[in-house]
Image (tube, rainbow, N blue to C red; front, side):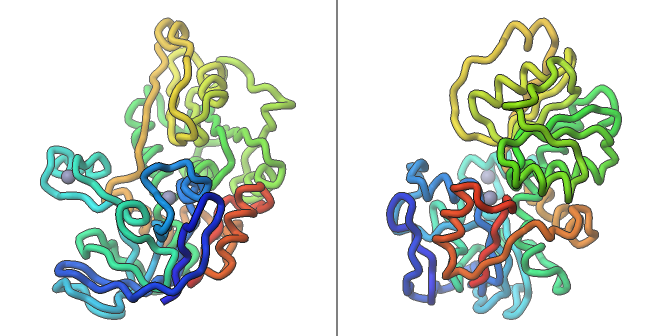
Amino acid sequence: MKALVYTQPQEVQLQDRPLPQAAAGEVVLRIEAVGICGSDLHAWHGHDPRRKPGLVLGHEFVGTIAESAASGFAVGARYTGNPLITCGVCEYCVQGRNNLCAHRTMVGMTRPGAFAEYMSIPAASLIAMPQDLSARTAALTEPAATAWHALNLTTRHLVRPLHECRVLVIGGGAIGMLTALLLRHLGVHRVTLAELNPLRRAAVEQHAHCQTVDPRTTPLAESSFDVVIDAVGAKPTRTQALAAVKPGGTIMHVGLQDWASEIDMRKLTLAEITLLGTYTYTTADLRATVDALAQGVFGDLSWVEERTLQEGQQAFLDLDQGRCASAKVVLRP
Ligand SMILES: [Zn+2]
Ligand SMILES: [Zn+2]
């Protein structure tokens, strides 16, 4: 089969790989579509020590079962999956918070990913996908579930309903865009999205119908947002988030570009700011997101770009250079 292999920093190459086999309890999926994630781009840069050359990346997939070694999972059935392979029995799994599973491994990291014609995966990770959902939409499940989970956690900490809040989203990448779309769907009228790339700002305005700003030319008003979603997660955006949040407000830290920074603990303390972290999604979030996508909650997703697997390297280059208006490219093997 053809697979897009990460060969060295800033290079993925189409190579022939042996067909994966379904081990007991697993299936082999014929991949229909797979999205390029920010974390794939991070790995492509050589910045992720867990993702080493020789690996097939990709964890935002939809496919049909080509081979099954798991009862109840028939050849031809269509699925996406939780790329986090979890144990099902640890403290977090039994709480329904399997994104925090103490023994989790991951597709496209600790095992070959979906930038390929075929991929094996434990059947326990599969999530049924309606036949009539387009492959491109179906492949958006994982990033959309990340936004879904982040807003679920945020709303639990709010004093007033989310739709009353003035919300700032920092970053117009796929997670920022999907978060803005979901906020608008949830009836939040005052959503501002800060993004440096003018192509992405235009895409967000067109599809999510919210106000956008270039924070380099229009500084964000201080202490003026009830909720700030940081979908970048870098030193300067954390500083912006804390400056922009209102007293009593909530910051949700979703992106993770770099790890360390000094933050204004004085404001955090005296202004009773709630600072939250979020990691991926639970299986329940993924299932709810499939349903939401099928109901059109995230809109028509026409901003998502489709390319062939062969065009993978160019897609990585274009995403890296910010040449795509689309923050999400989906590859079709
Ligand atoms: Zn992803
Ligand atoms: Zn577990």
